[in-house]
Length: 425
Image 1 (spheres, one colour):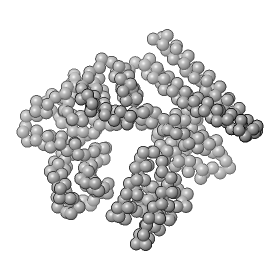
Image 2: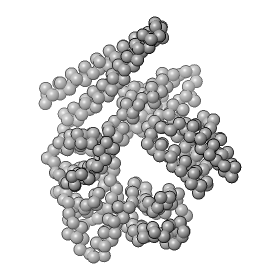
Image 3: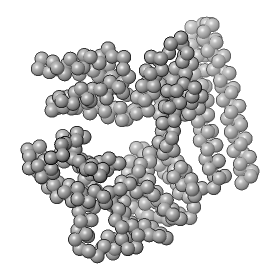
Image 4: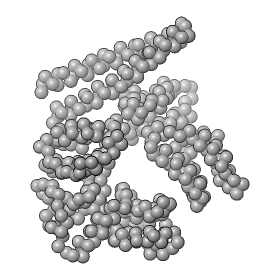
């Protein structure tokens, strides 16, 4: 995570006399009491008129990327800022201490564990209660924070045909019919030549765009992204800024804004704009990835009674598998991409398996906490050896050892529950 004050200070030093208005804006945030997230969001608004300047645009992009990459940390620091401002009479002293400990952990996985197990205890603080609720209301978001891999919704082309629904996943078409899922050819199900050409054009567009719940964005050039709104009212965006209603794609592509060599994007955007309704979230599929294994991505299907995975591997090619049981698929994804997809197949997993998974998650959380406490005990003991006896260090060591004993008891209880579940099974 960037040191925001240092980033602002260094950026301010690069500004010239002609950029005095920008310098004035930056100066206003150097000694601000706002949280880092609030400062960045406010800077986006205040510096928006100056984004014609490449240095300003690059500066804002770097801050926005950092906020996206360290989303949980920015949220925690924002919560700290709110609680600290309301801490009259030291009422929130203990929850603030736990919050600071959470912020100082090294990974989001550790932070999420501490939030769920320790910070959530202080739900009598309204801001903490709301924060924990928003953070954990989505099983997918919670699993993304606790796992090494990542799950994403799939937004793609869906076409209704006589046999069911055709969906384009990664590089292939799939037919989702009443009883099965089959990898197929578009020509086998679409007989109308004009519609077939349209779908082929939309398929081509998928290679050059990114889709989310709000927009379809095309990266036209290094400094230009044109987006099409998927809402009923429509709308065109340039670099995330919505244009007025009179603006058309013809006007944008006939202007100098679009480089000549990139004019060939025009037919794709026109076709997509005419067929916005064909792009939807395919909620029966999840895309699973992991930065540690960048050549592999999996698309997991949970459609009626069908359990499939489309495995896309740059090294060994793509393959489509059907599974007899959800637990087999979940275990394979955990092994290959370090991601627990249990929440997605909850309707197909037995109650016993769900209990087993939750106990495994709890064991992992307690183990992480115990390792952290053990490490801190060794650090305090080392400090006592170097600095000699100290009442403060001695008290800290005793507290850490007490905490360690409690965690060992909790871990033993979880393992006993796991043993009992195995016996029952």
